[in-house]
Image (cartoon, rainbow, N blue to C red; front, side, top):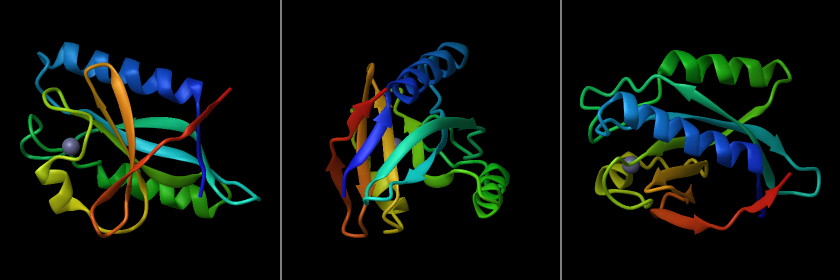
Amino acid sequence: MDVEVTSGVLAALHSHAIHSHAIASGAEECCGLLLGHVLPEGGERIETAVPTANVAPDRRRHFEVDPRALLAAHKAARGGGPQVLGYYHSHPEGPAAPSVTDQEHSTGDCRIWAIIAHGTVAFWRDTGNGFSALAPNVVA
Ligand SMILES: [Zn+2]
């Protein structure tokens, strides 16, 4: 199943990570939701990156999307809004790949995880057997 991401979303992910790390002394993870649509021919298109609060107790090494924001996004989706296709978070240190902690938090819900680190964004799918790398097509 193909995944598409808009160039605007990529730019937003980069700027959110840079901004969060700057104001948090480069230490805390930022996170948010990836919203978009399932395409009629199959596949998904990520169209918006929505920053949320990171409510994890230790934001230097963990992230937890604000559950109120997640609930609101699911409600909006049921009301005809964009779907919650996945989540994003940053790694202030370490590579743009799922960490041991991320593996532990994998639920196998097949959602997309974008991980931002060192100026790159990598996309993964939570398959339940760990994470598999995605190579989304960048669209305008
Ligand atoms: Zn992580």
